[in-house]
Image (cartoon, rainbow, N blue to C red; front, top):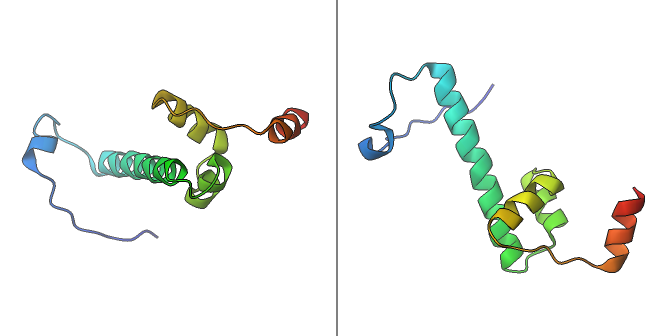
Length: 90
C-alpha cells in the first residue's frame, strides 16, 4: 500500500495532456519521483557528499543508470584505477 497525497498541479503543466486514466497518473508520478531521485543523487555527488556509487546506493538507483544520467548532464565520473580494475574483474 502506498501513501496517498493530494497535489494541486498548475494548469500550464497539464493543459496539453488529454484525458488521463488513474494508472497513467501513477506512471507520471513514478517517472517524476525517479527523476527527482536522480537529480538529488547528482546534486549530492557534485557537492562532494560521496562517490557516484555511494549516492546511487543512498537513493536506490542502479550505479550504471546514475553514471549514464551524469554523463548526459556533462558530469564525468571520477575514477580511481583500483576501482576500475575491481569493477572490470567483477
